[in-house]
Length: 120
Image (cartoon, rainbow, N blue to C red):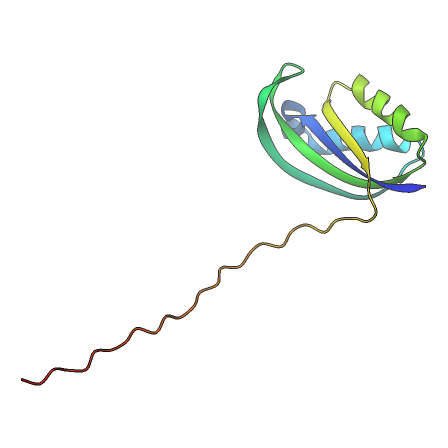
């Protein structure tokens, strides 16, 4: 078994109405091929640069899973047959990437010179 990262674009209409059902469909496709799902994360809805399967928007789903290498071709085929999954990308990875931490603003105190009072 190898570690894979999968990015799935879910039909926004389906995702907004019943997100859990949309995720379950993707998980069932993976589990039917003997996959062990390790992590799942919902990303935001985005507008596409062009129309994709008749849709202008989609919700992104990121998943990490262990799978036998020979099952990836079959998974990709099953995902293409799904009406709810608009696109998918599956790549082999070495480790699960941690989400980037939000940058904190650094406020530096600036020393302002105080002018000495001028005596007349």
